Length: 601
Image (cartoon, rainbow, N blue to C red; front, side, top):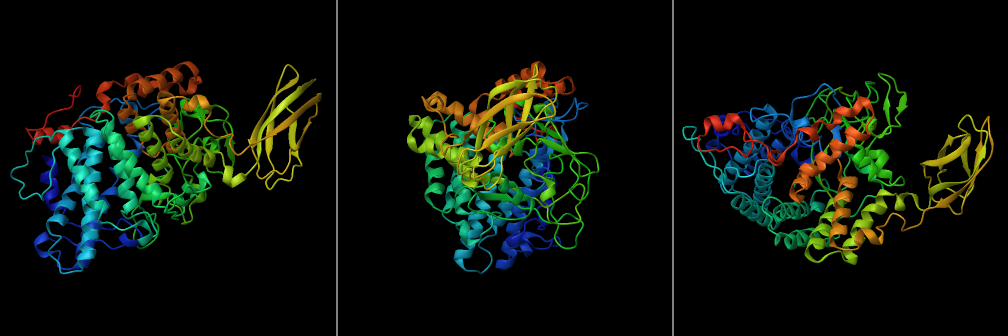
């Protein structure tokens, strides 16, 4: 296997420039394990080398999320000329991005194996050694989780590579690999420290292990293993995070992602993140990613931050939000920047709106690099834990009050209930008036607000046909009035309906039975977690990946404006073989014991 041939020497170079806080150290020179691991410092340096793989370009530095997760029912690659590649599900086993993921994950596994094989060598406090052991075991298991999620059966290697002369090893059955993942993660859970020991999210903590164990168990309960007993384990692990009392939702949804751009931590919401630092324009440690650079609000102004705006949100995603859900217009940006200017150009067509979750305008480190930044990538957030618990519990016994409440907490945050209190929910046209040839201005007056609401009107046949709330305002004490004034037309009137504490909550039809609640959770995970590298895996484990992609293609064909019809390509090209990636051809050519996944050449 090429992985073993190429990594035997590579893994001995503990390239450790990756992570901030605990992980902020300088690269080391080449050194062999026999001459290393002499003290606690060297052991921790080796651990940083295991972490370092997370930020590689093949994984969370760029490729894994920017290519393999971009084309789902949430987003599409905004390059009309792209007809080949993983972004449009038209590729083969010789694809370099596929091979890069495989190699990077096995590099991480080899680094972990070397560390674990030498962990007892240095003289150091046993409590400290146990923490390092736990983190290394967990990271190895997480790399195997990514491998199995993407490739299915993979070679299970638990010892350091001894020689490059015997690179052949067969694929291990999926059930055995997952058994090892669970064993390593469960052991790690008892060894690592609570997140409060660090107060940042870049290091593996007890909450991170528990939350990822819930994710792993949900995967095992779904396709392809379909081990339904694992729903109980998923619920158990998620509930441990909830019951710890260490975590809660940030009142502001958008602030979560502003924090990522500004190198700020909120360990109540953000449980585990891949850490990046610098932007290559300053001296010191630089380990950069491209979050907000490749996908973001397009524009080339260097002060705001260059963004290629390579992804657009799908209309499928746009349509599952309520208009009052603040997450919609944050995740699917309503504007872009005109060229190199700071001028915002607002979009009105859903499929023309680019991904806006991470916005470079909030970056603090200047000058800004046009292609790289130090924004952290979220691996696990508290809202995900709440939704995982609700899903697992629903599969066990159907919807219950606790699970429904957890979903409602996520929805209430999404609607800004804590952040904004009572605000303008809708503006309802009472009388359309007559004679309107130009759109009138709408002003919402009074009501004792903290932040004033705004709205826009639409006209049809000389009448005001609708009024849309643009910003809902905040903390209204009473119902405001509406003034409609324009250069033409008279007589239009409207009234305001204010929000209530529960208007974002699930309605009875959404929790009527197990099937209805599952459907609700499927949509809620997309509304909350879109673009965070989870959707493709979710759809695959639910067994609806191809179905949802075909539906997204159909929507693009039937409803998108002509300029974006090409968004149907991923769904047009997809088939059942895409539930797994192909085993890289480069690996098969070096390892005669490797077999290819069904449908791939």
